[in-house]
Length: 255
Image (tube, rainbow, N blue to C red):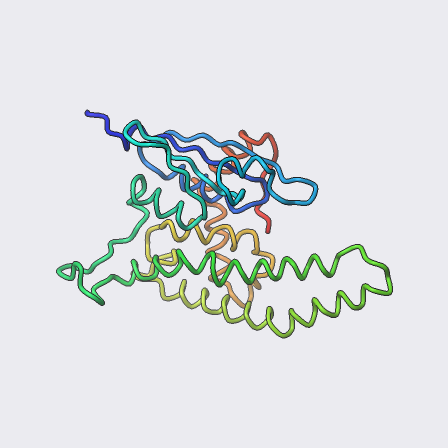
């Protein structure tokens, strides 16, 4: 077999504790024909990423990957969605649904439902869903912030008002939407895009697993079951072991 630059590609993941980078480990475990390594980083006392990550990418965030090929200069990529799309293009095409219906290649509106869902969730995971969970995290931190006792009613009141006016309604809308999406999955599939797991499911795994405490199992049984299925996925569990071996510490998905 003739080796190509793809089969010999090496990927380095710059992994940060308590970040969204774990799902990239999962994706790397799914990739074909690559070698990858994990370089771990710890947050500072201020819970921000360490300064050395800026030596890798100007934003100093995680996840970030470096892709090395014998036929080109090293490539550094940031942002989860961009990383997932690039890795899938080259090493994990099996995680992307068929784009066009038979005989409809290149036609406007000729896309399969599976692919349209895939494209949607590649953006929804980091857009609508993750934004809402980050706001919820900030409100939880405001509620539990160490402030003088006479100020605490004010901070708790502000957080509760945001929850009542914005978060509660939006959680209901988004969780209800996801419940219906799983119920109507193409071909009676168990995943968001059909019978087979896709990179979109992997991208969705972090916000759902990290935020599973906010999912009411009675109100959203299919969503809760889907989240549990992702968490128990064999490759996901293997990716956790890889991260724990690299970091030397137990892993827990958390916002």
